Length: 245
Length: 169
Image (cartoon, rainbow over all chains, first blue to last red; front, top):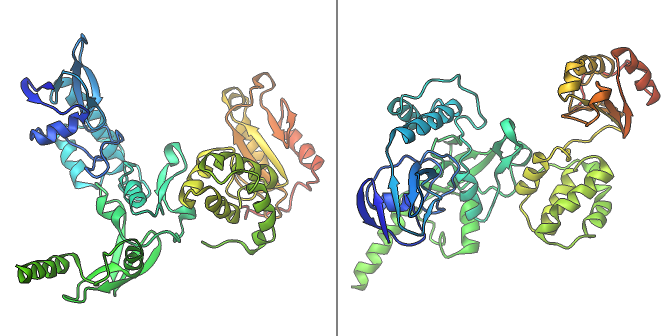
């Protein structure tokens, strides 16, 4: 299927999103809420592009991450119209996450006007929902978006330590604006108002996961049986393979 | 999750209400409505029982409870004063009514007196704008309320009009 991407003819797979095509073709598009593990969410609206499908008169604005290509189309990723809409989006996102360096950079790049910052909880959260996805994918769903409208925020029920949270920090790691606070000291990790004991790697001694996470993973898979951190696991596997050869 | 010990006294009642419905995700809203209707709020224990019954994580049940105005996460008083703060009522000084209620009962909108007697809430519009400002107390409508009328209305519901502290939760 032929797609005219910024004037150049490119081949797209049917059902592929515009963003996936652009990533493959190395056409840069700013994103916050997109992660390849979950696909597009259309939440942050940073990836707006212009699309004109076959038979349509005018190009329309669409979020590249959720727009699936099913017929021949023309896609433009940079134009005055897109600049304008991205400027507005950056301006609004930066209002929530004024402390985030990537948003600062984008605000400069798009010459976005400065609005008075609002304090969000967690700080710098743009409500993209990636953390909810990550936690759900872990099979835990300890956090979700609570309340609504201007009060909407990501939290655990009652803002208390959740029975479901295993302290795996998948939420904090995937957060594009580093909004989820996590503290690690004295072999303890504190996240979402809950304290976890950190377990050291049997080989290198690096503290790599919480006790609860390891127990949980042992239940679900073979992973974690050997109490090794990620890099030591790779090393031992490499040695095993080498000896085998 | 800490659950108030008093809620365990009602555990079987909660379960009875919950088990009227199939243990499927689509039962969630109906169960929550029944519990809310019966107890005027969603007790923590009930939320965790509902979560287990329908197979939806506690976080999502809580999210839903926090999303809809029809649900309350904290116990409501026996008498709920709903003051309309829609456009017409707002212009007709509904805010003065709220101020007066705060003076009389010691609670702001969204709060409940410590003795569990009264709650004050605002609603966006009751659809009775000709009667602005409107207030509804447990289903009974009071139209064209003046701050002076409030004392009498509170007395109707057994209020002494003073003596409440500001510790409403």
